[in-house]
Length: 227
Ligand code: C5P
Image (cartoon, rainbow, N blue to C red; front, side, top):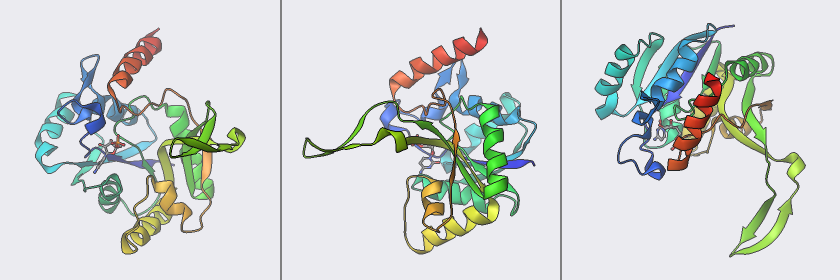
């Protein structure tokens, strides 16, 4: 089945400290945003892309789309104050059926194979998120003192994409807005509706470009993929 991808790109990227939207920073002379868009542009199963952007950046982003020949962007909508608001804005601008995939524009290295497994799982069960196993020991700490060592076997680090049947995500977003609930990802909104969210094992190189060192890791990932 074809899917629609919702791409929130309206953040400011303060932790990157770049003084501009981090998505405009370049890896191999190509903006991070374009790397991410290409992953979907090149996927035959991606039907269309819906972008959320800051109003003042829309014209520049439209220029980038033309320059880099990105043709699948069906709608560009205005993002909100929080990521969740930007995702909901995308959802409202998207077709009202089928599978929707939410993906951070700041994760340019997503693999097609992971996308396809997510779409397949969401078709079957309604909701699926990309995740990797926790590699480090994780402890709960209060006031600098360890309270508890959490059993690592059951810990997963959650990424995007997160894939949903349209009706599942729409209800979760609508209820969250109605109840003034702000989550850290879409799965959290769906979980609170009592829905089961499935894990799809992803890869550690699906990095979210967040701080300066991620740009270095990004260059390494691109070099490796060229080999
Ligand atoms: O800041 P962070 O990297 O966690 O944001 C994840 C994604 O959400 C980024 O692609 C960012 O542009 C987007 N975002 C958004 N609207 C916001 C905040 C973040 O679209 N208000």
